[in-house]
Amino acid sequence: MNRFLSTFRSLQYRNFRLFFPGLVSSQIGMWIQNIAMGWLVYNMTNSPFMMGTIMFFNAIPLFILTPFAGVIIDKFDKHKLLMIIQILFASQAFLLAICTLAGVLKIWNIIILGMFLNIVAAVDTPLRQSIFVNLVDDKKDLGNAISLNSTCFNLARLAGPAIAGILIAAVGEGICFLINFLCFLPSIFLVSMMKVNEQKDEHVKNETIIEGLKEGFEYISNDKRIVLVLILLSIFSFIGLTYPMLMPVYTKEVFKANADILGYLMAIAGIGALISSLLIASKQSFRGFKYIVCLGVFLFGTGFIILGFSNNITLSMIAMFILGLGMTTGLTSMNTLIQAVVSDEKRGRVMSIHAICYMGTTSISNFAAGTLAEHIGISLTMLLFGIILAVTAIFFLYKFKNLKFA
View 1 (cartoon, rainbow, N blue to C red):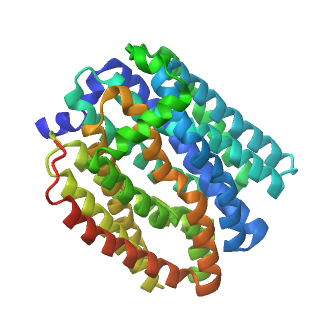
View 2 (view 1 turned 90 degrees about the horizontal axis):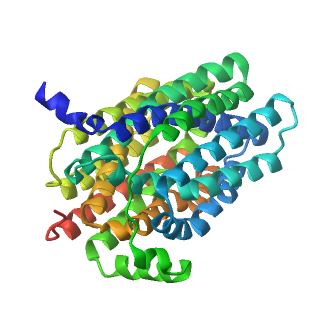
């Protein structure tokens, strides 16, 4: 019982209790939309290359705008920014639903709305990661709050794809986009109820955005621990986070199956991810996270390798479970390591670079993965990615050996 209470200890704080269920709701909606969008685009184009190209253009704003977003987060009121972001996410989902249900959605609509979504996400991702310190009263619970955030995403990853697979088959992609809009309404209400007390550093408030950006890069470059974790995160994300884009292709080419099988495979990954985030949330100190990171990367690669060899649905489900377990173990541990060492007045800028390494690399990697899958096939692509991730895990285990993060 004590371990159970320890796992959810951040929920003792009012702001986190309001933030958490709203995040669960909005992320379930986003996963429903993401799966529906992947399925819709592949049906419209019937090409992994075109899917990668569209996602390349969609993700460009993340790479360009996120560093500036970090400076804005450190300068301005995080609570107000969070409220605005939720409203913009809901607006994008509503426009996408209207265009789809009206039958006027074209590839150029998808690119424009996708770019708009990622402009908003460029601020949302580092904002969400840097606001945790303001949602828990005791900084010792920061790691727990980060892990519960990961739990939230994994609940969404578990429920969202399964719901999306059923809805796509039953009522089509437009209803999925509409449901995403409805899922953001509780989040908007709960965020409005939060009361965030935040002290801004006067130097940060008064410096220009360019000065703040330069100072943030200097701060990062002078800390070897942060640099190494960000490099590892970049490799991890560049290779591994292509899997949501690749899985519709994998489902159709390997199993000749429909969206319901895709939903089941993605949901199995969500189960592995959920278990991982709960186990990490139960940890009460930062000790050992550098080894957990490398274990997560290795497991992530193992999942890809099994997918590359598999032509059996049961084996692929086992692979997706391992993939989900490794993905969340790696991502959550890397996030926790950085948050353990960064200073509060630089948190927004550091987490913005973290967000670029996490999401911004997909602007290139989705394009590269789609091109590769088109030329060598989906199974060989999965196998190659898995080998790269496994080798990377072993290399960084050596690099982290003599570094202290807590």
